[in-house]
Image (cartoon, rainbow, N blue to C red):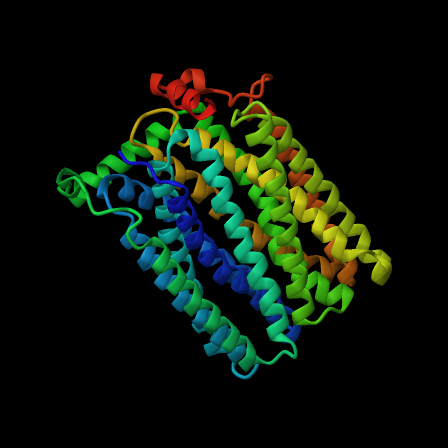
Length: 449
């Protein structure tokens, strides 16, 4: 197999960046507009985002299809097109909620369904392509590049859109979102064109739908029986439950407690993602340069990232009571750094483990972890928004309600730090690999060379 060079990896990163640029507007800006500008219950955007993550539970099946079908590009292009259309419809629906809420909410359900299908299709196929076509020696570094570009898409879009959205109007929201969606699709189409190549073994096309369905059940069962895959799935679920919840609550928190405008709170989201970018760079340099690609440093970085995130989120709970004197922007930036440290350490472990165990199961493993992340994000979105509404009703104070929710998130990150200790041995190596197939140790050994 001809592995991708760095140009090919960078092009895949452009697709990931394009995907993130659309998603950030739907999960941050539109969420805030519904809650603050239109005074709708926070449960509404939480349920919509949960819907789009719930549909990503199909990722294991999509990953298996990518393993057996032989072509990923159509899934990526089709997914990005679906995502772009969903993003545009979501903006129209959000703007419409100011005048006619019932049909607008119905349109939003359709929009977020398309967003979920688009992210699941494009995201899973892109990660499978990355895992299958990147030299094992480069996998961790390639994952770092691609995820940094994803965060770059978040940060650039949030910052630029923040400037363009002030002064806010529904029409301006639609215009900005449509522009971002069209540009993102065109960039991803140009980036993926020709990267995969055209040679596809005919045998991979010959399997029937019934055979694929039976094979998927067996493949999923085999992957779940692998100790390292199962432990990592649980860690992803708990840590992403905490990480995903803060995505939905930060914008409304800034608007309700600190009286920020939509543009200002969107810029705040950009500041956070900029911090994530810096955290990722820090760990990438430490692991790649100092550790020379080995996994021995990942244990400390993963645990430290979780504990740092817990500390900074707990600080936001206190900051709400301090008010305008609280250094919200720098605090959110450092929170982003801690999130980035946790994220890139976990992703580096993911790329190490994705080829471990039984052969030809990379797509199923990646899909299983993606589904775990999706369920956690969706459940986190529902829980955090319901808890916010309930706490506000019972406590009668937005500041106190947000402090309660932030405290719960901090506890989840502390639990995640404890779970991270079970992923790695005392020497810092991923735990449970000795119980896997013989090909496992070979794959991990190559990735560390």
